[in-house]
Each structure stands twice: as structure tokens, then as C-alpha cells.
Length: 382
Image (cartoon, rainbow, N blue to C red; front, side, top):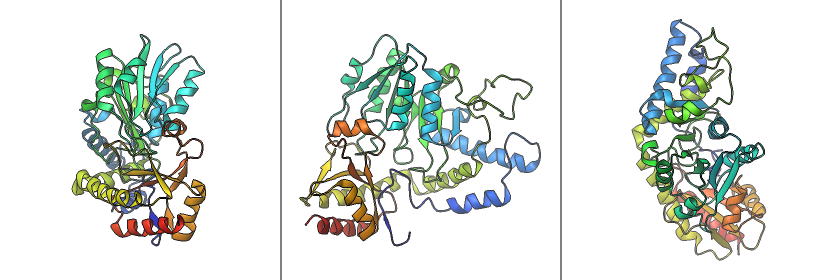
């Protein structure tokens, strides 16, 4: 892929953080034993790896105890575990139009079992009014679940305000931080969040198949585990262990993925999340300044000032999917077309069902890549 230009960081980061591939190889080649299943020294080293990454993630997300960090296969599994573990028939949950299907599909599954859903409308720039959220709250509201940033247009939602509203009313607040973890600070305490779902392979710059959620003790006590089985602890009992993290970590963890997180966190901590974000933001601003001068492309959902480095484009003279295909086949530029697994967001933005061409920028992108991209768009829209 050395000759390709990658503008699809919302999907997954590329390249991964320096050292990630080597750390995974080293683990698989020399350390790949299980955790919690043996008392030999190699198992102890694997335990130390998992414990260390858990503690670092707890600090990363503003959580006091590493045991409250639960590893899963990613943000989607995390959201499913949380919402299905808490919500019961008759409960009410509030969510927003900007959600990814990782949130919407589990909730609509639960709706078939008697859970009630209210969806807060959002503007054509992706913004959400906290007062519109308050209007959706009912006496039986048990949970609010929402994304931190739109994966379609990059708009940040007012999660601190929503978290405060929920805290005052005793409502569980669940945050989907798949698009922001590693990009900007995500602090449970600052957001009054009871659970934060994160993905390891996006802003955290690790490999696919690893992620997790950070959960408050209050929520964990009420949650039923989505999956049960062996944990290496309480093996005499047929009951799910009551302690964290064992309660939600049945089966074998993705240890190579955790090793990848170990390396990527080291890179982020050494380089500085602010520096990485600054570079992506500068690339994004350069792109926005140029794209506004191209008449054949409409910028969608750009009104909000608080945002991630994501641009949603609507090609006025051609199908958006065809435009993405031309960018790939003729110019070797990788972008994402379609609905981005967020149909309600596109309804809010006015781009359903045709979708958009999404361009999402990362720390490794360069001004030269942006210039090449802009010239390609000019040629395509003559």
C-alpha cells in the first residue's frame, strides 16, 4: 500500500503505531501463553502484560481502578454487552440520530423484547441540543447511550452536558467513544459516564479485534454478562464470578491484541495525543480550505466548530459511490462511500439514501497527500 493515499481513519487507523507489529510478533513468537490458567512463569508474564495495559487504560479514561477496564473484541461488542446487560422489558432508553448501528441495532433488538426507545433529533450539521434530549426523558428512563462524535461528519456531541443531565436524574450514561478514544481526552469523571466503549484499532492505533469498555461499579453491579464461561477463577462454581473484570471476560482474551495496545499506548504517551491530534487537524483544515472552492462537491454537516478531522462530501454531478471508485481506481485514494453504518445520521444530514464520500484524516497524512487529493477532485468535477 505504499503508493496508496489513505483517508479512511474513521474505519481503522493506517498505518498502525510504530512498534505495534513487532510487539505482536514478539508476543506470538515468545510469550503466547494464556492468562489466569497457569502458575508457571510464562503465564505470570502474560498476566503482567494484561494487568499493565488494563491499568494504563484506566488512567487513560479517568477511571480509578484497572479492574473496571473490560476487554472485548471492540466497541460494538462493548456496547452490546452494556446495553443488553442492563436494559429489561419496560425500561426506557434515550439515544440520538447520530448513532452508528453498533448502538442502534442492539437497541432495536431490545425494543422487540419490550424496551422503549426515544431518539433525539439532530441538526443538518450533526449538532444535538441538550434541551431536546431533556424532552425525551421519562420517569422510566434508565439509560442514555450516545456517540461522542459522528462517524459520518465528525461533529462532536455535547456529552459533558448530557452526562450531567443523566447524573442529576440517576440515569445510566453510556458513551460510544469509538471515534474519539486516542484522538481527544475521554474522561469518565468529566462526562459523568457509567460506561465508555472504546475501539483499539482506530484512534488508539492498535490492531483490529481488540477494544473494551470502562464501567462504573454502580453499573457493573446491575449488569448481567452477555457471555459466560471459563475465567480461570471461581472454577468450583457454576455461577458467573461476581468480581471485575472476570464477570465480563469469559473465555480467552485477545492477548496479541492487548500486546498491540501495549505498544500503541506507549507511542501515544511518548508522542502526545495533543501533538497527534494537532497534525490531523492541520491536515483537515488545509483540506477544508481547498474543498470549499470546488463547485462540484458539497461539504455536508460542517457547521459545528467542535469536531473530529472528518469531512463528508456529496458529489453533485455523479453518484457518490462512483466517485469513490474513481478515486480508488484512477488516483489510488482510499475513502469511504455510502451510509457508513449510520442511517439515521444521514437522515439528519439530508443525505439518505444516497450517502456521502467520507474523508477522515490521521496523524500520518501529509499536506502533499491533500494537495494530490484536491487536484484529483478538480479533475473529476470539471
